[in-house]
Image (cartoon, rainbow, N blue to C red; front, side):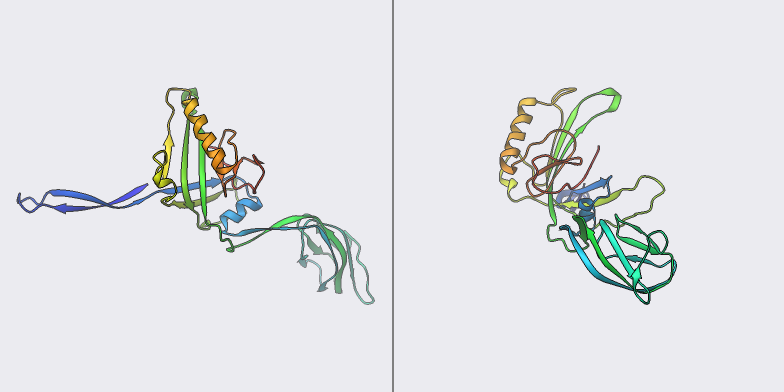
Length: 266
């Protein structure tokens, strides 16, 4: 959080003291650390769109001349029943003799030299791809439900951020010496819809525990009922990220409406 203030100095005391201040700008940053690299998180991190591909089959996909050590990626991933032909005259290639392949990624490594190689046939299962920098959905609403674990306490706290825009992540490390993470730095915006409701803040709101170890259960239930009615979902504890009026927790979709955004563990 940050704010910018303008000061006005007086001219009657001779010491030019501060006579008045005025806040000219307020900013609320939101930082998310995503612990899973999956298609949904990649779409969020790359400002991309998720494209779901139905299963299908391919015939006569041209590869061309190859030599030992060449690596070729087929048009699709999640493949099976691959049949390759090559050479003059054309003849079937033998797996683990002429080539090896990874069916999950659709990548082939050739072991022998062949001319005019063709993927005669293969099948592919349904899978997803992420198209980078093609997203038109740039604003999100976040709900945070945390537990204070200091000294074994069980206090819970909740925070809502009304509107957040996330640019693409500054970096996307796919090779790491330790657990990989995706870091997103977003900026909160004023919400004109909640501005008129005294229960909500312009940017966000925090709800600290009313007493050690618990929240005001009646108030919390009331707020959750309101959110459920407005956004057609139910919160089931732990950290949740909300996108387009749906609630999601961990790797599980609670009401089942849209894909998981993040797997966060405070």
